[in-house]
Image (cartoon, rainbow, N blue to C red):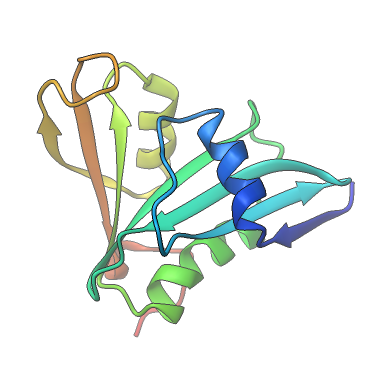
Length: 139
């Protein structure tokens, strides 16, 4: 299978939005992974404030899309290009697959937002500091 990175914000946002509760925010950026012409994973970045950026990830079921090259690109943008100190993300507490995925990547739970999920449940806030990211070189 031929795979390549894509940077079409609208296309990637539609892909991620179909799988997560995310709305388009002004200033967002995106990286997607396409295999044989089909988008199989996408990352939306938003809310960069000079130190932190929010990262939202969605993908087709399974791990066939999860490559070291894609992970490298996904973390290179916030930690090298933006020079962030940390990346934040959130997962609705019921979503065991997403929690496992974030924790596998190295994100650590920082807080629980009671009643903040789209279904009225809780949201778990995850954070990865730059020094905790194994996908990009350290400073």
